Length: 485
Image (cartoon, rainbow, N blue to C red; front, side, top):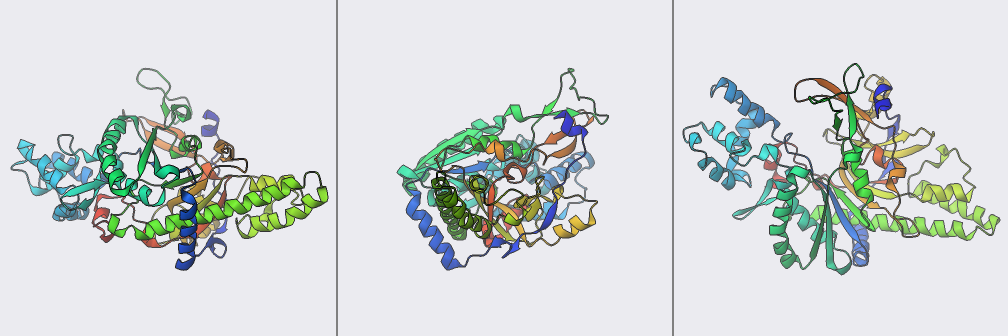
């Protein structure tokens, strides 16, 4: 890790954006419904799992309100109210947590004579109130159902019941959590799950994990020397969500759905999401079955070299036409059955992408790897060299955005799980600059993002999905959007 900090950063070399017909598949609704039905017919035979990274605190979600509350504490009630805060306060009754907030405010005596802005922000963010600024998004009430509210993690229970019901009617969910929030999340699910099981006739199997301390990275001071805390001990920091590839690798499942904790909608708006998530899974299973058939054909030719060579032609065409592998950039001999089998024998993922509407974040691109092979990848803006005008121009041609709508097939032809750590681009790291709590600057390594460099060696297929399936909550006022009301 210290060596990574010392050397020059390697940026992702973009070749071109993935676009419809060149890396992005477009399906009409009829085909999506066919694939969804195909998936439904097989789901009860499979081990399914919904993987939800749910560990982060919602501090970014409440950044503007928290900053204004700090300003009020420092400057008094006369501080100018930012527009997002004014909008939050004016619409407070439209939030699913509004009744909880009123009860919290009533429990803080000194708020009785405070302004409405200070009452709302203190009851919402302060530890004496709802303490939302310190909670993970998993525990925040997103949607209202009559007189009650439902937290984002509970919406994942609903989704799982409708698109991840596997063998034996089991809906398996795996949540990655921060240790400090684990008990609260478990308690909420313990209260909610019996109601969902009774209503939907399913059985939930919930699993939890934390980011492995063994993936933490050492910090260095600006001069490159190891950073030590106030007790003289070396400081290690969590290495970013790319480290979760090790958590994902331990999930023994035929199909794994990956989705962010905050991209959920109320039941009344869930139909497009449920259709297209199942369609992605149906396409995944079709592609996997075709890949396995080609692997079998190549294996049958072991004792007959000429038959094996004949089997490489349709396999290579499948890689090109169906898996989007840029076979022209493969430097190895594609008439060699072993080479072609190696290209097929990889974990497979089908990723939904939405038309680019200017949201910050990553998107689908053709990227040139260190071996010279061009492959379809999800690339974040921060992975592109800001000083390279050509690369920035290519970045600007993106037509689609990554909403983290991914379905994975982690097993090989023999039924065993791939070692997912073998398919990580170890050089695709981020060097981040932070400050220790005493104000000292530091630098550390963050591993490649879970769906970026950590899946660089996977076979990847991008499918355009409707924008209606993408409803993230990055800021608190996003919950006022129509999809969440």
